[in-house]
Image (cartoon, rainbow, N blue to C red; front, side):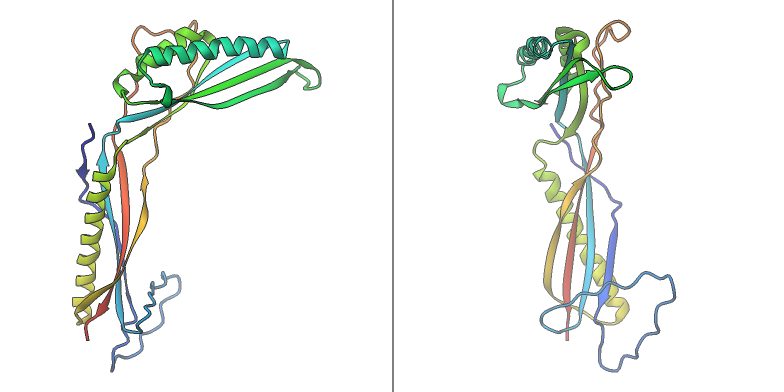
Length: 254
């Protein structure tokens, strides 16, 4: 179950555009190195005020996407592929036995490549890699599942990466969107007051696609001596940030 928690700190970027009211003197040019003022062009030709609000919220991930690989080698390409198929099937059977549904298991990569000697000139055998992407909805049991996969496949197992996500982030987006609009309006009101004008009707609202923070990645994991643990591998979801940016343009009341 995800829990959204608002973040009070937000980034607000705003600009006053086309405040060319009658009787206003031309401003001095900006000093060297100063950031240029943002401008907004409106199709009605009237002065306007533009503001940007960024809503930022946090939630707890409830979905884990893990990429598991099987790597086998043999002097013969056929033997390497046969061994890989057996281990890959054992991996998939283990995932299903741990409650992962067939629709959440997908082959994401299959490759057969030659291996070479130290000089890189003579082919010494073949290496087969088969990667399976599994979507897990039980993060608490993810560590045990990874250990079970390692036990079924042995030293051939590889955990390429994992990534956390929130299955239904609509509530988080709604909260971030509300924050962004309120912040943009607050900033626009402050600018209008400072300029001695009043906000008119909203001319344009644009939402910039949301972005999430970086997903934690799980280092490659190998079974076998030196890698066997008594407890399941720790897999901690932490929290995930979601931001949503809104640009709003108001006409200046005449």
